[in-house]
Length: 124
Image (tube, rainbow, N blue to C red):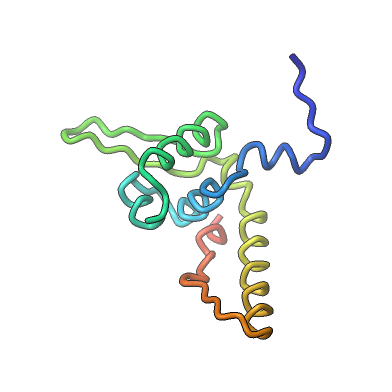
């Protein structure tokens, strides 16, 4: 059956949409990480959801799962070349988020971005 997207942005969202995938990808933009490192960096995500999202990103060719032959087993995730092409999207989203928080704070909100560092993607 032919898959039809009504807007091109749907294609992108089909791969990186949702709450956790962009966050995972931004962390991997800083370099390879193990599941435990991602869990530490994204404490609100459950282990089950993290693994599910990692599997989907791997199936879509956005991340690479590397298994080291050792005891205990070591698994590391990194961006593929295709995953690195998302750089501009995530840098733009991050910059927009910083501006949005500043605007809301000017209007009396009390919002803080804990880590405004999004330069991991700038390495590529």
